Image (spheres, helix red, strand yellow):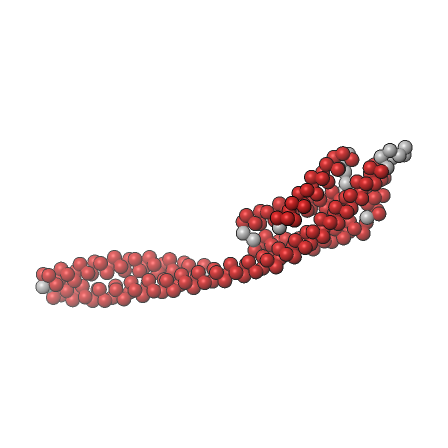
Length: 210
């Protein structure tokens, strides 16, 4: 595709060179005409014919190559938009599912943590471990879904423009952080809740903007 753009550029340069040569032969022709120099006039005419035809030919082929290039770029753009539309929808659907599952698991862990904090034999590690065991299927699903969405994500980035790709990269990073919070809870209860609220808001906003 790029070759047509390069060819067009070269042909336009050649056409411009021949145009200036054409002007030179025009001057030569008029010098021969006015001064009645037959040979000079003849050289001017021959030069005008050759450079005139060459100039028109190079400009014509150049414009044709540029038109082909523009058409191909238009087709590429349309194809990219089509592919982006397909993969971005697929990505959003998976994104929402992972976000919901991560929210559910993280909420459950937070609730278990809070409910057992006042117990005399409270042990945060045991409580969190028990909560994760209760949600072992869900956390496994989240991991599988993250593995699955990675390929879709790479396709979205491939077909997105620069600013859109940046938005998806940020959203994907938030989702992974949210999933990690659910699968690997750590810190104090207060910091856990703060991080959950922050990521929950971020992911919700990301979903609206995808």
